Image (cartoon, rainbow, N blue to C red; front, side, top):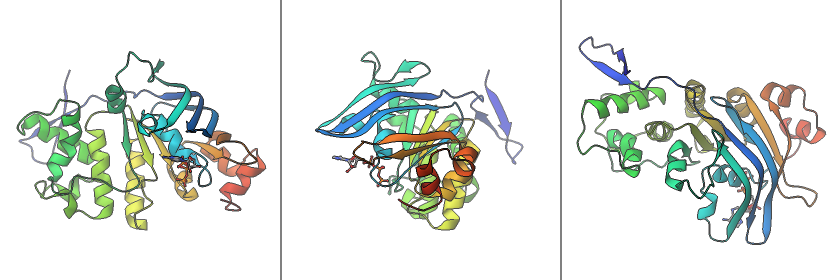
Length: 280
Ligand SMILES: Nc1ncnc2c1ncn2[C@@H]1O[C@H](COP(=O)(O)OP(=O)(O)OP(=O)(O)O)[C@@H](O)[C@H]1O
């Protein structure tokens, strides 16, 4: 059954995707290499459906590599290899029977630097992911109008751009561009959204807006975020994993758990030192 919602204009009704519980992800015994250099060792992590999981740890401990393994981007790097399993609804995304493009549709990604198509309109930017999945209609229609509005609303950008959807993506501020990228990622209805330091290029106000967006989409989508900003990890995440590469060991998880526990009652001294800014 198609749900609908009324807009302020009583004559229009836009389609809304039925709310659903997104799939969670589970990484089992993930190890990774660049050539002979092992950068991750036996990482186990459950990323619960609809929750926000933050990956924290000093530079070079393998957080971004781990994130890229979660949507099969690591294998695109020449010389890169990995071992272990990534389960999406219990199915290994590295199963040869599964097409990488399907995993990447269900597991979207937002990068450090916002990367909208600069000359493409805001409207078309939101729909750009549909072209990759072969589902983009040739012409805008009521359905694409509804999807654009819904995705921009979810990303917290609709009110700011609704009167200029034909303007190019590059006409937006850095923070708006990042929320446009979130809208683009949401438009293909993913289960999981991976975010690699999505606020590192943004000013504090834009950072707050993106953080609000993350909290807003949590529940509808499973979020995994890499961040160096401890306050941000504290504010946005439900669950936190502390990675470390030290004492001759490749990157591994020292401690993970509910965010409150990691910040207020860490079990490991190294976690305590890191979250309190004493190293890294
Ligand atoms: N394309 C690559 N080729 C070779 N080595 C790489 C490549 N990308 C990352 N590495 C190495 O893998 C290790 C982990 O890097 P990664 O970027 O995953 O760490 P990170 O924790 O995300 O770091 P940062 O917080 O600085 O982004 C580092 O030693 C890095 O030098």
